[in-house]
Every structure is written in C-alpha cells, then in structure tokens.
Length: 353
Image 1: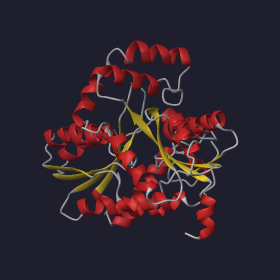
Image 2: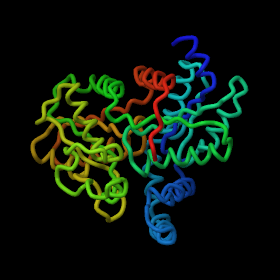
Image 3: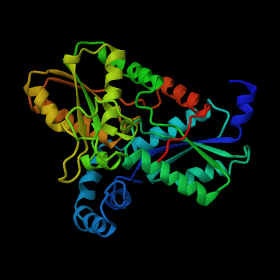
Image 4: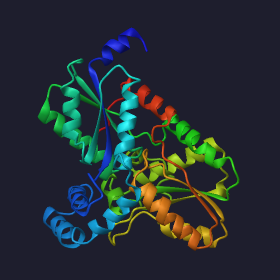
C-alpha cells in the first residue's frame, strides 16, 4: 500500500456487520432477540399491526423455547459462535490495516450504534468516512438492504458529517470465490458422491419486491438465466452465480452438485427446493458420501452448525446416507482476512438502496 493510500485511509473506519445472535441461549434472551429480528419490516414484510400480531401472538409464545434449545447445542464457553467468530475476524483484520475496525450486529449486541460510536470515538484517527462491509455475499432486502439502511440512518443520527461507503454484494467477486474454493478444497479432495450448496432461503415475495421492473423475477422458469439488470438485487440469481463460479473454479462436474434453500419460516412459498427435502432425496437416490457447503454465510452460526450440521446430518443419514460432512464457513481463514483487508483499503462505489 502506498504512502498516499495510508494517509488517505487514516480518515476511514471499517465497520463489519453480521446478522446477530441472542446474548445467551436462555429463553428470555432468545425471545428478546427474535422479537427484534422478526419485527423488522424487511424481514417480516407485512403491515406493522399484522406483524405485531403474528410475532407476539403466534411466534414468541412458542418458538423461543425451541430456538433456545438449538442455541444451547452450539453455544461455546466464549459465547455465540457467530459473534465469537466475527469478533475474531474483526480483531485479526484490525492487525492488518492502518485504520480503526469495529464490529456490529443488525440485531442483538454489539449494536450498530455501538459499532459506529467505537469508530467515531477513536482518538487516534479523525474519521471522515465509514466503510461498511455487510457480511452477506448476496443481496436480500432482509439482510444486505436492511444493514445498509440501518447503518446510514444511525450514522446520520450520530454524525452527519461522516460519509458512508458500502462494499457491494460480493457473490461473484473473484477474490471471494477463490477463497471460498480454497477453504472447501480439503473437503473435496477425498472421494465423495455429491456436493450440496445450501443457501439461506427467502420468501418468493421478497424477490418480487426487490425486482425494480416488477415483471422479471419468478415470471418464468429461466428468469435467473436471462441476462437482466434486475440481477443486481436478485438473491436467487446471485446464489446461482456463486454456485456456477465455485464449481467452475473447483472443477466439480455438473452431475455432482445441486442447490437448495434452508431456514424456512411460516407457510408462505419460499425458494425451492428446500434443503431438508433435498437431503432426503439425495440419500434415497443413492448418494452415500455427501458434502454440504453454505456460501450464504461467512461465519458458522445456528443455521450452519445446528440446522445443517446436526439436523441436516440426521435427515441424510436416516434416509440412507452413510457419510455427511459440513464444510466450515470462511470464518477467520487467512485468505478471507486478506480479502477483507484489500477491500478495506479500496474505495468501491456504494450501491443504491
């Protein structure tokens, strides 16, 4: 990095933002977290009164107990894996760049306000620009869009003189794909029958809402294969691009992989096929040795460790599978940290959201 770049970046602070986690795996803390998460208008996108009725009347009285048990299965002595790993990434990134680095979570702690204050209150730097890295490779209104809007609003409230630059979704970024493949390579070197890409699911209506034309997404079976500017905000098209880039780089034959979507909530139609159904189908079709990778997540969390690593494994093995391996997320992989450091010292244009 040049001296000019170092001087320029002394005015910049980096804010990493992930989804979040309860403060503990207890029912009250899980209930508080789920309430904050599900009352977000971009997560449960119905009118406020109906959202309040659904969340308070039908979800919070029952789901926190079930979710708390799931969190207890993955909880560590240090805390939530998602938060622990994210903190470790922030600390290691700080050691590689000459600018303040802070971590925040969209829901739970540390909050977005807390992360921004840490940057703005850093006395060793005069922050004139916050560089936001939403830790979501793909664009979705319930993740990437929510983070950008929340950080923009919080920064305007805390210090309107500081500018905001945003790392665009990196679903097909060459550096991201390279490290994704490198991290998975040790698990793909041995014999395996099939590689399943399990992405976080979304209600289909979310795709239609983020379609600026209102007539492309899900209007036809090959909508994601038809070139369109709509793909800049289409989660489904972007996960297919990630998959295509990965298998091309890793040399995975077309007959040896498939894509599915996990973490469905409610009765609405979500992106298909569903991961649980695909795990059972693969086993019943004769797949014995399965590898699963979850590229929508950059840090292992409840959705990877418990939903896939525990329940998904049970589904596959009980349906006739013999060997199940969950490929870890990027977590604090050295090459991933280098990618984050490189992005932090560049100045990508902020997307319009």
